[in-house]
Image (cartoon, rainbow, N blue to C red):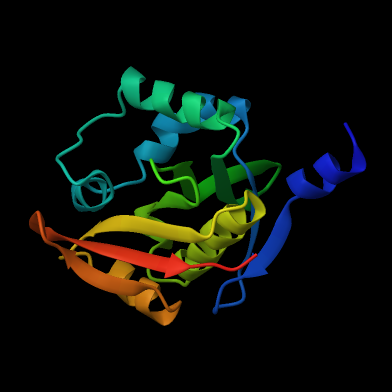
Length: 180
């Protein structure tokens, strides 16, 4: 492994407003064995807000998509973890994937319920922008349910533009130009 790769994969720390330190690092294939445990940290409402449809279980197809994202050159997943004794506990994640427009990527965030409302969304959104910039994108966007006011406030705070999807008024498109 070269120095650039080590630096790129090195966990960075961030502090939540309450002083709690979290670490950000790339998702590892080994993390997937804890996917069901992570998913169980979401209420039905959180699952709906994240997947935009009732999602009672984490399906093998969904996990397969995560693995495919891990293998794509212009995609990235970063997870937020906290130290819990000898173990790491995954508490959130940011994902970016390419769109059909070469310079644009799409983001998605997830945060387990216990950690929502503590500033982690802002940290993860900044991480999504950082990942996008590092992968050479010039624009980042995401689809957010219009009732997901917490996520829309985070996007506004971070200078994303918001507009209602003309095809589906229940969805707000949030987007931001990012410069290299």
